[in-house]
Length: 148
Ligand code: DQA
Picture 1 (cartoon, protein in one colour):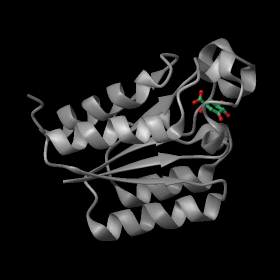
Picture 2 (cartoon, rainbow, N blue to C red):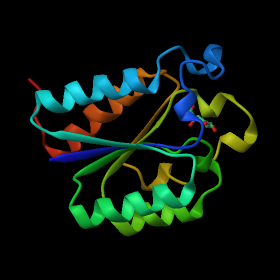
Picture 3 (spheres, protein in one colour):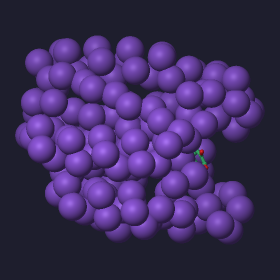
Picture 4 (tube, rainbow, N blue to C red):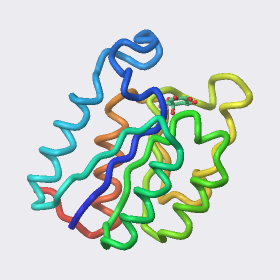
């Protein structure tokens, strides 16, 4: 199975971006952890981080065409703004888990609505970079992929 990890705007700055809020773990660290977890179940991890909304939308279309089994996505600020990205996820019909490093429910009111939560398998928020691993495990469970 192929699993796709998607990270939205500014997440390329993880590790140095507001570390008191988002932690010191870099995107490279997260990518290597998830790659290992995928390898351990003979799955393949692909990844895109982009600051350009159209690139992420086109990556989701390509994932649907390529038969990607599941997506772990942190849409970052697009969480709260992007009907277009929501529509791309709906059109792809690929099951996905939504991840947020910070607890969006404990922050500004404009972060408390997500365009993804109601169409996701589930959402993991507020547990830092660990959320990506938990999200991946939730996806494995949904897809019937056994972890040893
Ligand atoms: C975020 C939360 C969003 O509100 C914010 O715009 C981000 C990161 C998180 O992972 O906590 O860029 O998705």
